[in-house]
Image (cartoon, rainbow, N blue to C red; front, side, top):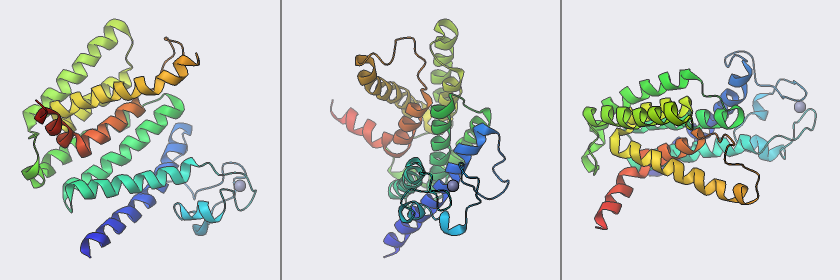
Length: 258
Ligand SMILES: [Zn+2]
């Protein structure tokens, strides 16, 4: 019973925070202060009431239209609310009721914001890297609580190697070829401190595999030329989330094949 209660609570917290993340993703690139004023309809500027802001449900009840001007409300709002809810539930499912789960939920929030802002604007704000640095310190402090069942032991040295090897490697590629953005370099450096070297290498590889898979169709349709700049942060954000939640098991399974 306690278990089901926790799943429901993590989901409800997740969709509520997801609703806030939508505000961050929308306002931050436009320079609108996040704390300033109530939410408003971007079309008619009408201030939204509490009943218009219930995560997922308001969108369903309003049939995806603004109550005041009838302008369609994008599917991405409920999608990211649901996604945040699901990520919170997964963090709880994997790491149980622990501080590591709480830090993991914070990590998922940052990854969603960084990925979506990069996808929308190709900008990665430096403040995210500082927040991730704080999350790295928290994961280090909370890790002993969940390390018992882990196959990979993520120690301080492993974290530093993860940051220096992957971040430094990408930095060299960025300097020599210019084919890597500095936003990606900084992101993969801090994720090294969160994940340790094995899982950070996993994040790097999976990110490129995901990007390559997503590029096949547009490339065949000639929508993307080889020199088109592709925002990589969304792919690395997904691979980092996968590494944080399941990387340990995936690497354990992979090594057991030999
Ligand atoms: Zn409106």
